[in-house]
Length: 257
Image (cartoon, rainbow, N blue to C red; front, side, top):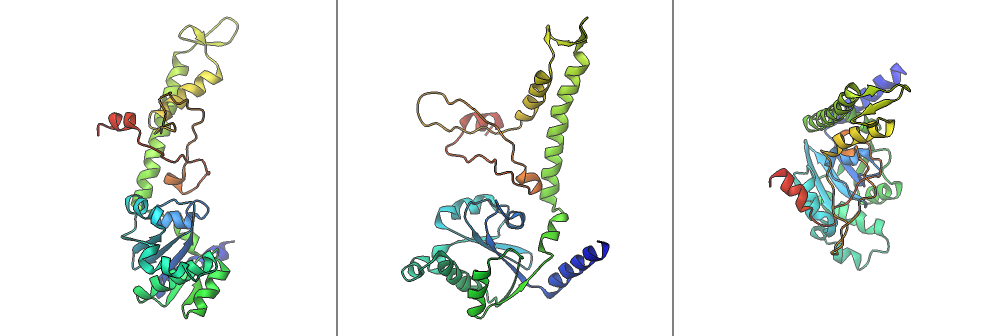
């Protein structure tokens, strides 16, 4: 096992030494490497290139604006910037369309050789190779996520602080609880059950949560599910994120903006 780890580290170092640009063609929900590099989540595949320490994204027109706001990319382009509409008139498949966009995108940057992850689609790789682009597989690409960037460390620290603060409220409640004659616990005149303790801890965590409206009518919405999605902190997606459908003025007011 030790030898395997050392070989992976050596492979990653060789890739960096070669200075290969790294091409991504996948979505950040299913492929953590994509989110790690771009800090952008989209349900459909995006095109991203990491080169000389900079990240560039090519996304659909629907996602372009959000990618500019949310991602860590230095530049963001729309598919249309590389003739998507023109290509779409003759392309028979989505793969053919995206392959041509990638080819034009790489040509615009003078890039003829790229490294890709082991999960890069084989069909897409063959199309790009047929267009004269050299592709090498970086089998140690995912190992990079073991070393955290400053923004990731800050996110981990914020998550840890929130968890510690929430559990401190639970500990404080336990310290205030008294033992009844029958051996059960009581807090503030009511039975102190595991459910109450869980609720106290949960409220502490929810103080740092964001709730989003899901209704557009005049009737109030009822929140029926809240699930934390740790992908922003640790790069592990539980497919439990909520999508913002409309602004939440209460949250803005709470933040004082």
